[in-house]
Each structure stands twice: as C-alpha cells, then as structure tokens.
Length: 259
Ligand code: T3D
Image (cartoon, rainbow, N blue to C red; front, side):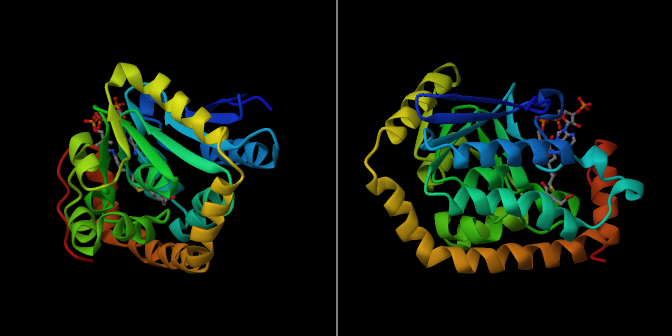
C-alpha cells in the first residue's frame, strides 16, 4: 500500500509508523487515521513484528484532530468520528500483545497526546511537550485520555492537566511519570530505535505481561472510550466548541460562555 500521510517501515522486528503532515504539526485528518489504522493492522498481523514504534515528522509528534477540517460545514458527528477513526486505533494498540513505544519528538496535543499515552512506553526528546488541549477548544478528553492520564499521573494531576490545558514540558513529564526517558532531540531517533529493538528481542513473556495488565484494564477501557465519544458528541454541538475552533483558526484566545 502507498501511504501519503504517514511513513511506514519494518526492520529488525520493529514496525515504525511516522505521522507525516509536518506542515500541520501532524494533525489527524480522516485519511491519516485510515492509513495509520491500516499500517497498525499490517504490523499487528505480521509475526516478524514484536514492537510498534510511533513518532512524528518535523517539530511535532501530533497536534490531535485537524481543526481546519472542523469548520461547522464539515464537522459532522464528533462521537461518530471518535468511534470510527480514533477508538479503533487506541483499542488495537492496547489489545495487541506487541509492545507500543511512542517516541515523542515534539508537541503532543489533544488526541495526539492521548495516542502517546495509550502506548506502553514513551521516550521523549527534550523538546517534547504534552498538552491536554481539549479545554482550549471547548472539548472533553478523548482517545482514552480520561482512562490513561489519571492512571499514569494520579487523579489530582490529571484533573489539573485536563482543566487548565497547560503544557507539560519534557523534564516535568519525566518527573511525574508520563515518560520513561528524556534524551537530546538529536539523540531521539537512535535512542528510540535501540529501545524498540531491545523490546522486539525480549522474551515471549513481555507479551504476556501486556496481556496480564490488559486483562485488568481492557473491559473498562472499551466502555470508557465509548463514553468519551458520547460526551464529545455533546461538547461538539456546543456554542463553546464553535468558538474554540473559530478562535484557534483566527489565532486568538477563545471567549467561552459555558453553553
Ligand atoms: O473528530 C473530532 O474532531 C473529534 C476528535 C478530537 C480530538 C482532538 O484532538 S481535539 C484537539 C485538537 N488539537 C488542539 O486543540 C491543538 C491545536 N494546536 C495547538 O494548540 C498548537 O498548534 C500547538 C500547541 C499544538 C502548537 O503550537 P505552536 O505555537 O508551536 O504552533 P502553531 O503556530 O500553533 O501551529 C503551526 C501550524 O500548525 C499552524 O498552521 P499555519 O498557521 O502555519 O498555517 C497551525 O494552524 C497548524 N496546526 C497546529 N495544530 C493544528 C494545526 N492545524 C490543524 N489542526 C491542528 N490541530
């Protein structure tokens, strides 16, 4: 398959998916979700692959949903968008016994942040930033953020990050346990590749570790993803979301009214 919005390669047991719309900070469009899903399915079904490595081109990891495709005339149902485009990706990353590693090379915002959080491990560049950007555009967390973030950093910190939408810089992300390791930006590609290949060479039992952890979590995750989609449908119909998207496109602060 030829890909236009991602780069996809397989080597030494590692399937690397690189989000590749750097001009839009690798924001997700429907074709990018489809290509990402197709590559992930291919990697998941390939017995030679034991690790997924996910990263971004240019200065960003991923800025979440492409908001330029969210003007009122082309918006549609956000709940449906999550159920059809985002949730299947998160579920495949978790259901697979292959280990998912995010190499967070720059800003990870909104669904882009939560894609990284759905992975088993995160290695970050010093330039990485994690932003629960949803509040800035009048949305609620999705793509599993409301499931993963409180489990990773605790309820109090998670609520702070959701409610305020402020960036967590790489050093702070390391301190609060969001990432396993931070390296210099220029070292990230090699460090991520070494870690991914180490995981791909691991014993059978590392897949069993993931299976054990998932047994406790998966049922709840499925229900939570569905509930997030239900809530995002409500948020997506609000005047505040209209204002949030308009303000982003006009490069100004939004003025929300709570409706
Ligand atoms: O289907 C559904 O809609 C439901 C799913 C929702 C899931 C979500 O992810 S909703 C949340 C979407 N994401 C955001 O709200 C983040 C939006 N972006 C930002 O807040 C900022 O861009 C960043 C904090 C990520 C980075 O800031 P900065 O100052 O480093 O860069 P910038 O100047 O804002 O962006 C550079 C360019 O990328 C700019 O384009 P331009 O002006 O040069 O033509 C900007 O518009 C573009 N860009 C950044 N993020 C997005 C984007 N374009 C489209 N969509 C984006 N999300």
